[in-house]
Length: 247
Image 1 (tube, helix red, strand yellow):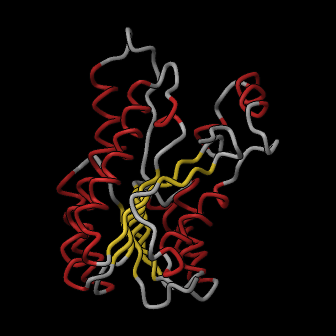
Image 2 (cartoon, one colour):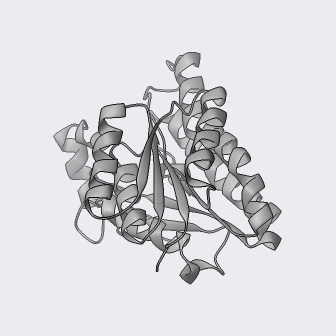
């Protein structure tokens, strides 16, 4: 599954799933533009990539800011010449029961998790269309498929990503551009580390494979979807949840 000669933009690349995706894509030969808000963490990611003989660059980006997205994409193209692969991974949570959820928390999650994917895709799609090759991979969630109490904003944003994935897949498929999503389940990240022990235990019991997933489990699927091996897969949601949700 070589990605030699490809340039990949990964949002939310400073930690967790995005960090793992950046490393796995670079390992496969892609030049990786790692984007997130934390410069220090981005430098660590790029340091790992270059230290292993790969090529990458750090780009500070708040995906909730449309102007920053436009400027960052321009900077990446100026440095690396193109963007072949887009991984829309950046995401946040602002959990609260819907009856108490503040509008600002709804807007923040929708803007960061969903609107940013639309904006990033819009900025890279033109060059993909011209070169007649592209891979767009959206990181959704099991909770976008089954819902979750206290996460109406998060679940809505992740469900929206699934619809966005399918719509884009239909729009650009004739130009040899695929658009797919991965739907992680219970994955060990900074987001899940803060959960109470009883919730973690309950979550683990719901996983038939009997273990919590890792960011590498997700990154391996992203690498596959970015490769030529997945050239006839588009508009698909790949579940990475250990069997927590089937069907």
